Length: 270
Image 1 (cartoon, rainbow, N blue to C red):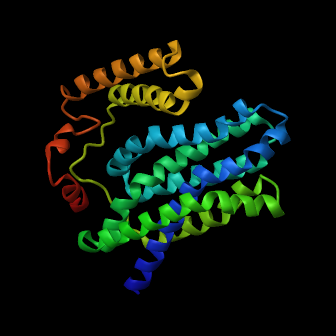
Image 2 (cartoon, rainbow, N blue to C red; image 1 turned 180 degrees about the vertical axis):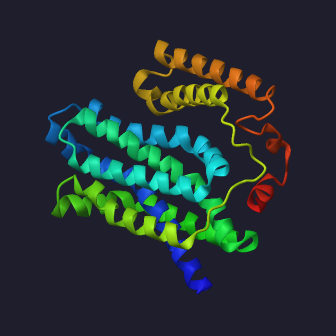
């Protein structure tokens, strides 16, 4: 029974990472159809891909922290819910601005579930066997990244672009059930429940600006006033974030971990 629970739990984690990674690349193949459907410019429809990557990049670290504080299973189900609702609303969208907005919701859900994979694997399999599970999930993630364009092409050949989002729904429902039944709740008992609001705001402000420049720097021009201004703004916010974190009792990020050679092992032990 325990072995079956482990296999089902691992299958759920693999499926989650598959669809989250797939949605990073599958939409690219559908952008021409979406552009035509909304009679929009390529510049505007490119935001469908950009906003997803931006949300994924920015919210991964806060999601991992909240999982440690408030329960990984709980946060995982929250992320799955946001990803599923976002997928449904993306497929139902009849307005480009609305599509971009709910695509952000989908990316937020993806960012929440991604960092919870490792601690959930540890809670299910134990520290020694978790490395094998993480390796399997990593392999599935690589396959999903490569499979996006061909799967998107198949969907567009037989259906409309809306189904690149609808295909997520049965997987989200299945994995939500498996996460609920196969995993116990787990926390990091060493982490305070207090949320460092100022640290979180400074971190998000810095990472949003930096990520935006990295994604859109070529289009804006690497030496344009926007790129330079956002880069300076990012550096200021991240600098203030580091100063703030080093002088509070319960920081958002434990910088001491970066001095630990066995940081990853210590993380897996929790």
